Length: 434
Image (cartoon, rainbow, N blue to C red; front, side):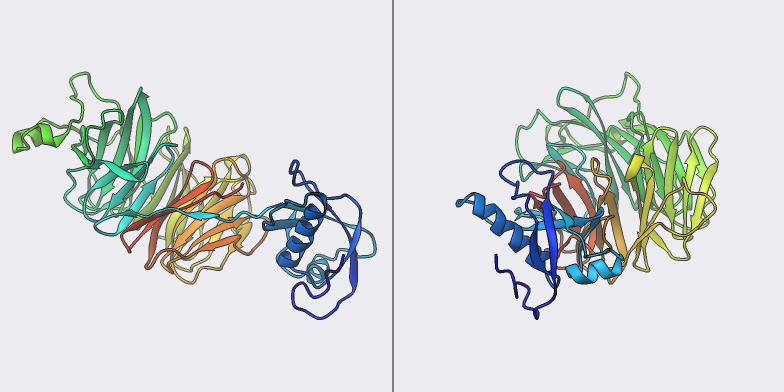
């Protein structure tokens, strides 16, 4: 097989390799060792594997692959990688190939009337968005099925809290109007498009804009971070007298209606941050994680209200998420704009175990994949969404479908990335093989 010059470079020394994979038929290439130029990069290696697969199946349609050597993704030429990792090329080198983790399709954008500041795509059927026009929206099959109406200022955060029963979901929204609101949505009662509903409960108590909200895994509580430097914890359970949220089209909206809405106060307030609490995460029932403009990342014991771990990174932080191995790694991004990842299980050091620095402006969002310990996505004011793998310092994919700052991002259905931004669009990049 002649693979010289596949990457456009000069002839280099040959390296004996064997390509292996955990992929099933028809992705199994011949197992024999072959000699290939050391100058080949990922593109050239992908061409070689596709040629091998085509030799077994004449109908094979070429597709891109990624390559692992000793568990690390190859992002240099083969020769440069071996030198950098001090790997001998004297013996047959085993190279594992996997499907390239890049979006294969760009869906039609979901259009909004103003900046899209928040998105929650944790539900497999729906996408929940928050917008600077003051409305929340629930999207189903590419159309807006419900509009959440009632906030008096821009929405900053949204969260799908739980599913209460057949077709009923509870969601929470946070706003610059200093309130959180809880909504019960009957997703099966879809009489027409853009059904407008009002909140079933208003949560008051913050003295500044609500910047971030997160639901407890059980769904019976939510927490919120605010410009007032505090984190508040709220109960989502409602009394039996609480009336369901209904379509505003079916009732007259008046001051009496507003007064009839339930109101709630914070069950607990966590104090310790000295500037805006920009992001909160509640992945474990007993622990809340937070990031702040005071340059710190903290974890809080929910029962005692005390911070149990803190890390200062010297920069304003915008976002935080917890995931990776054992759901224990903390990723945070902000103004520098370097994504940093810490492992709190390794005491005695303030240094992150991973740093990713391909963005050129503030990082506005970071989100771990729920089922992969390696993958996470970031969004940035530079207008780009990037897909990362812990096994390489370079992004796996750069999505530049937005025309302005990207303000939020999330995974949807395991193989799609949803992002919203200052171009008033929610974009969906789909068919990502993980």
